[in-house]
Length: 433
Image (cartoon, rainbow, N blue to C red; front, side, top):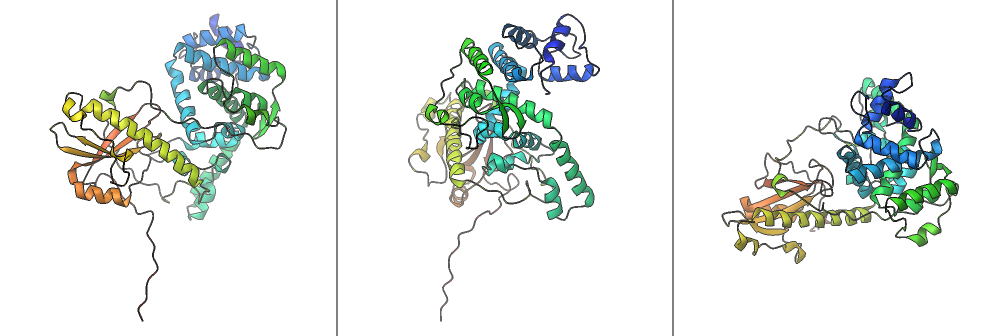
């Protein structure tokens, strides 16, 4: 998506049955189609396009003023949510995933890093570098696309190094798109937080000049955003007023106040009849074996807290799934036990049953990301699997906060998953003289 400062004129022309009055009309139609505002071919507005243009006209932002870009994008996101536009769901789902793993305000402030993580999230033959940044709880400011450096350090060919440099140059040259993306993400964040992040965004950000450098919103622009939110029924009272009130403006040097990350929750409705999918097929590691250019700083306390929250959410899903699976065996549902709530040293989380009454010992491995995201199995869990045999099942649950899916990995694990030692127990040797 590009800047929308000229979108109003194009949408008005299409509404009248005319093409956009620009030399690259085909490209502009593609941009508007990707935003869900015009139909394929650009001969008419979509329902979302009609509603968005009407909203822009009502609030007086149907102009080419760059200072109204946030208002335009906010109205587009609000209208998409209001009419339940399915095409916009992917935008909301992606930002929901990002804000769960990273501080959303830091992503917006460091919009060069935001653009890079967007690029790194593209998957190629099972290789998605962006997953590593989520797995390792990397801070936003530490996200960097260092493919060329990684190629040099691993002794890659000159062609690989040159390719890495060209990709880095391409990313670095997308400054206008990076600016627009930062503003678009402000709109998504305001909508997904139900307006609670609006004060921090309005007080700290503005028109993006460079990463972490903004031309502040003026009072008229702030009032327009607040009026839009009030009309659409969104709250603008933040959960941490004291912190935000003490924050400096966009030209200050103090750190941006953190916005509390929302605790992940399961979707309100889950169709359990369609959640079970096949186990992912193993995919070859790319040459070099790594997902990034070297060691990254990891906040282990933050990572442990996030993993604990996701783990509990995965177990919540698994209990609900088991109850659904045994729905025609009420006598077995009554015996279902969430044992890890009482003792998390057993090597499994849930005692359940197969439909014939055979015991089923379930170890839940949850993630907010895709099914292929790596997970960890402890020594005690592996030992328990060896003991329980075919009654031991790893229930891998993915996309927990958006559209949960699960697969079963039943013991024995050979040929199904690859187990790689990552830590070792170390003791001093005792010498006998």
